[in-house]
Image (tube, rainbow, N blue to C red):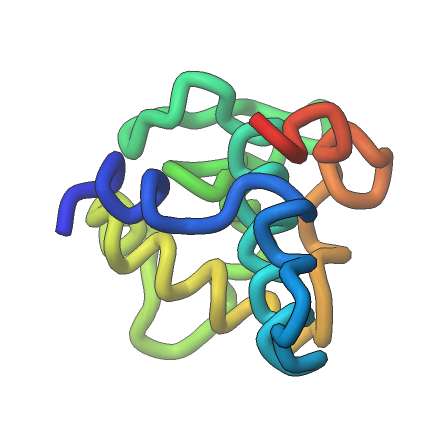
Length: 119
């Protein structure tokens, strides 16, 4: 499935996840998807896979979900792996689960993602 098709199928607003009869777990999963897409848009508004940003601290934010190079200190993972957009998205999800939330993304910590909810 293309990136555009995946994004088109994901809920983009909280109204879409608040339908009567929807379970709490489903609402939480949908809310997480909405927030993840909003964070991605805030971090990488162009939605490109091959994009990077140099930070003042000397680190680099890389690819679709703007994964910071501080997270590459893992056996078997390197920057070149993240050039594959699917690998980058999978790694973003892994990072989200490990950190139990979106705190690795500055757009979340600063609240910048909120402007992209519902778009």
